[in-house]
Image (cartoon, rainbow, N blue to C red; front, side):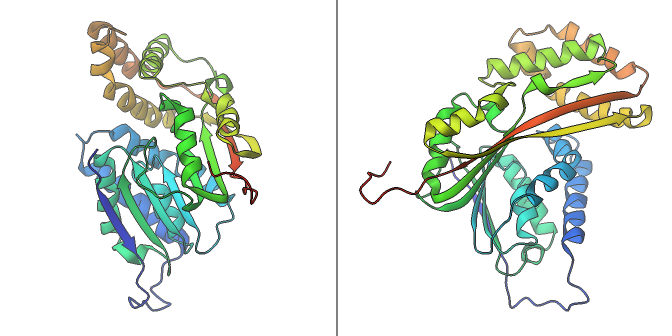
Length: 318
């Protein structure tokens, strides 16, 4: 795989007056605005639905990050960084050295473009740096014992060999470093009233495609086991619950996102024989024409936190 890297580093000599220095909330609002602008100006971009999801989940993601007591000088890896949102969000207010890796060079180009539009280093707090690199989670171009913290959100559900990935994340953590993995488990999903038949059929086809690609939408319950098998001490496990009542008006926006996500997978679903083109298009049109209704939804993600143990003086390195 060709490795592409872009880097940002705060420059203490690039001073700003106190009156013009942005607060954390202002920086994050500007980040969201740049993502939204890119989305609006690139209607044909690949992974469009994923960028839309990045915006829709910003509040929950930042609540999760606020739980972590980041320390100045930490080296933090975001494995499966997508559009670079986590490194850019953390480094806006904490002087860390953040690295984001992703297999998709297109997503990383979007991240670099957004960072450039934000004014590059001016988005980062003093002493912070962000590096974005194309790499596989199975074979990271990173020395062993490098990071204090690795974050991996909503990646394991897509992995064909999550145990191999966990072993690689173990390798790049320093002794005492921690791995935070967060992912879905569809067993914890409830909606009322239930989704329409059209949406249920489309979501089932999407889930089958993910499974055929080696993914696992019930991976949440397995996270702590993967970490333990790799040698981590399990420091904590928890459920991250979310619930909402979506009004009919809000439902229109949710439907547009769901249509983006499902339509983006149409060609692969059809080519794999999971659903015929006629049936797929029929269900999409039926779902798109449904009258918006209110709906209660509840789901929960699983978080597993593992710590790489310090080795005894006489033990052999892994």
